[in-house]
Amino acid sequence: MMLYNLHLTSGLVLAPMSGYTNWPMRMLCRRFGAELCYTEMLSAAGMVRRTRNTRTLLERPEADRPLIVQLFTSSAQEACLAARMLEDEGFDGIDINMGCPVKKVVYKGAGAALMKDALTAAEMAESVRNAVRMPVSVKIRAGWDSSSINAPEIAAVLETTGIDCLIVHPRTKADMYRGSPRWEVFSRVREQTRLPLVASGDIQSPEDLSRLRALGADAFMVGRGAVGRPWIFRELTGGAPPSLEERQETMLEHLDMLCACLGQAKGILHMRKYLSAYIRGLPGAAAFRQEVCSEENYTQLQSLINLFFKSKKVC
Ligand SMILES: Cc1cc2nc3c(=O)[nH]c(=O)nc-3n(C[C@H](O)[C@H](O)[C@H](O)COP(=O)(O)O)c2cc1C
Image (cartoon, rainbow, N blue to C red; front, top):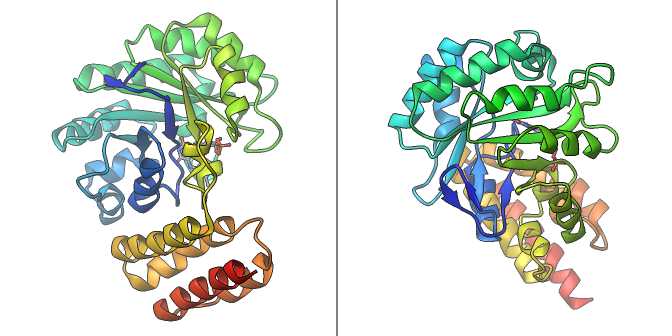
């Protein structure tokens, strides 16, 4: 199928996740089968002002492609300026965040706050669509809360703006990440638009893909399921679970890439977010987590990881 002018085979993509999907996680997910990745959400204002934080979030190795940059803002003008800059820098597309439920984002009228007003949402999407040649998508939720579910209506309006595809995480802003995604809302979105649809929410197994394909999803976005488990993309297409060696090597490589990306001290701290997920389900995981999560020395951390896996192989 075609998405962002790209030909995708499995339709498996890595979700934008603030604080997680920097280039090390993206590169590992690509290796195991993610066909497309997104940056975490970036402030369009920060992009326009070229703040250091935003520039850092855009750093990537040459092989980190195709890559869609996700922007959040409440200003169509800012979104257009940022999108033009990103187009000049050779990114593969822009996604506009209309789903972030975080207070400091919605308070400014960005993220899920845009779901409250279809007209503003459409104006934003249309302005960006007209400002750049590259593909543009929008990521939405089911609505603001259970009494204002409007994703089907928003989808219909967004289609008229000429965007290339729509990503739907069918929980409301009020749901945050709780409860099951409201897949019945996703089906209603499908009825309202011919845009390619990317489904997001709790995707964990090949059965989930079949179910969502039957609801009309064209592509599948994996978020939390890929944290400390980049091989989920291989497993989703029927591939083997990782061997112990593969887990160990991937973990060590992730640590190295994070140190290269953020510097050693920050890289080690950042790795803590993934450590327990990498060893989930293995005997002794709880004790290991306690030990590694307080380790600040790179060489020590490396040997703790090696020792942990060595003990598993002996068992
Ligand atoms: C820690 C975290 C950060 C997230 N950051 C973003 C973000 O920057 N932009 C976005 O559109 N969605 C963000 N999301 C939502 C995910 O992209 C995804 O839609 C949601 O988590 C449901 O998919 P999952 O169950 O596969 O994680 C975030 C989710 C989590 C848990």
